[in-house]
Length: 72
Picture 1 (cartoon, rainbow, N blue to C red):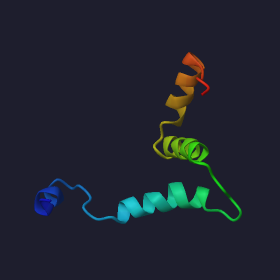
Picture 2 (cartoon, rainbow, N blue to C red):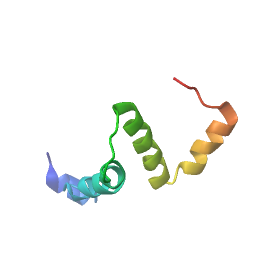
Picture 3 (cartoon, rainbow, N blue to C red):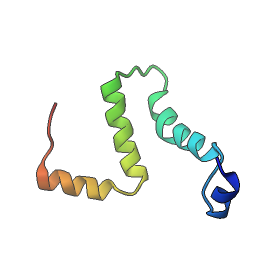
Picture 4 (cartoon, helix red, strand yellow):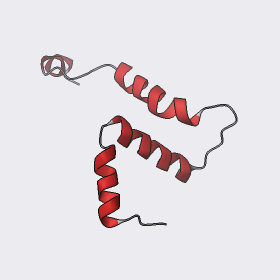
């Protein structure tokens, strides 16, 4: 990895940003007392939390309103 080049581009090179995102998006929701998750349910919840945190929530619901939801 060319750290000097990444730093020059103002790109994050540490794991702190990733660890903080995991704590906020994953740990706070999935690791509460008494919770048990299956992979599909956890995946759906994490996708929704990621949408909300990335400011794409309104765009998501606009697409749902336009095209509906496919149930699997």
